[in-house]
Length: 290
Ligand code: COA
Image 1 (cartoon, protein in one colour):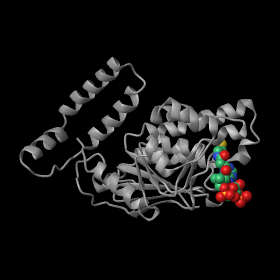
Image 2 (cartoon, helix red, strand yellow):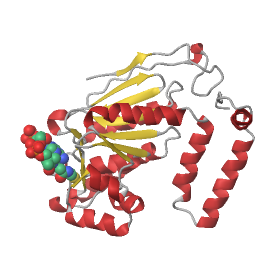
Image 3 (cartoon, protein in one colour):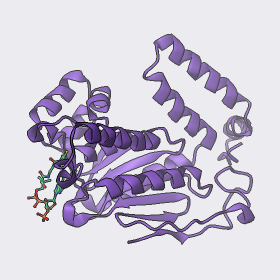
């Protein structure tokens, strides 16, 4: 339906030597056509919107495939520094498409889960920060998709839950694993076993979301948070994301080695020289991403 449009294709971008901002001749603006997503890019920030509002943005096969295409595009495009993921209408994403789920048997359902898990993992391991702007229902696969993003900002009207047990299922897109990692085992099990919905304030209280804002301020808040992150050194951001992701599943000693190695690598970058000098010279740093 809508395409990957570039609201403002910045050929004359700010820092010529940044990996995010190559010379104009190297910029590729690949138009992508999606049926179930929209994507716009403005000033290095991509906004990806799941767009099946009549089905509360439920994730059917097509949407999963388009999310896969979109994340690869976001990861590879040199004009994109980070992304906001949101939903059209009154839902963020109300879960996997139950109409499609109903038709799956054992083998195909396992493949479906593994495909969705792989796509969500590409979001989680993106070296570019991705913020979920949760505008409404984030249920089942929707809550799982939000958890695969790096940071979650919720509207006051958002609702969260993992209601799969009500359908005779369990989460299949990572919910049984990411939810306890985010909120702790006891709270996760309560949500997973009860299938109960919680509101945005409760999601904030248990650590499922980072911030709750009035609905009208959601996109501005998420964009402002992303813009602040993108003002920092890009290689430091990418390494921080990687070390946190890999370290959480390693032993503490292995994880500390990962951290020290990345710290050492970053110490050799121009950005580290610029960042430390800028501080000492009492001026704003101008990072080149190198
Ligand atoms: N899969 C497929 N369709 C879905 C859907 C899903 N996960 N969630 C909502 N829809 C569809 C509804 O079937 C309905 O379609 P229709 O108008 O063609 O009948 C439309 O979206 C609107 O939903 P509706 O249930 O009428 O809205 P509501 O405001 O009364 O209830 C919810 C909203 C989110 C509470 C309810 O839709 C719901 O419980 N959805 C399923 C959530 C879920 O179990 N997700 C996990 C799936 S594994």
